[in-house]
Image (cartoon, rainbow, N blue to C red; front, side, top):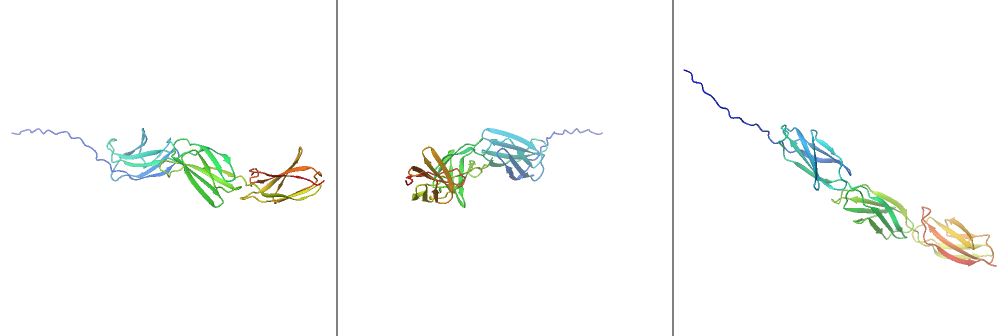
Length: 280
């Protein structure tokens, strides 16, 4: 006699092991509005990668099968946390997340202008950039001389400059990590020359006058010399520190002004004036 034995098999559910963490997560490029991430696939096996990025209360994510991603439409100058997680073939078993944090580049400052110029100072103003930034790095150069300062306001008054020379001013927005910078905005202009010194009339005749002066402190390119008599005005540009006027009228008063001009041809210093009669 044969006996029949029935065997009952308990059903078992198979589950996948968690993938390992991705390796060598790095940022390969970043701009004001995008970040490119790259990583090495984890040990073992995985099906795809879940990429998540957060800024404040904003969270977005994407899934890729490659070991890189370019994330766009980000806000300039803010901190993002990027997390990459390997996902197993069941599309739900995940490994340990790998996270990297960085700031996008701030945007360029807008409307950079000079609102005031003297012989030794300049005042710059600008509009804050789109997005976010923490402070502004201001740099000014003249020849081989370079100085810089940092401000949180959208203006700066720069002092102790040299008269009559060209300065290049650069303003750059800096993110909250104090090192990620945006594109620089530059403006170039001259300080006003100083006033000429020791203006004198050295020779007078019935029809001529000769004037001499000492060049101003700092630098200048040439001198604008102007004389007036009644409603008549004449102007000359000279590069030397003397000028002789001829064909003048005997016995009348002439008012003569000397103004130092910078190398841009239009930035002028304060005029020095003298009044003198020709001989009768």
